[in-house]
Length: 69
Image (cartoon, rainbow, N blue to C red; front, side, top):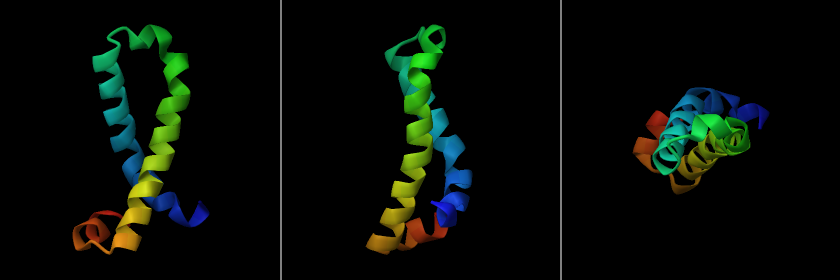
């Protein structure tokens, strides 16, 4: 995971924002239960950038290679 920290750094905020937006649509009072959703938000914020980087390298899609460091 150490070699992939730049991808996590770049994409973490995007995936956290997307996750909280989806959670807010599903549960409008999610801020009252924030500590329940926090592990899911952190897990998605770390794992999805890693998955995106893995897919960009394995599938060799030019556009993904340009946007994922």
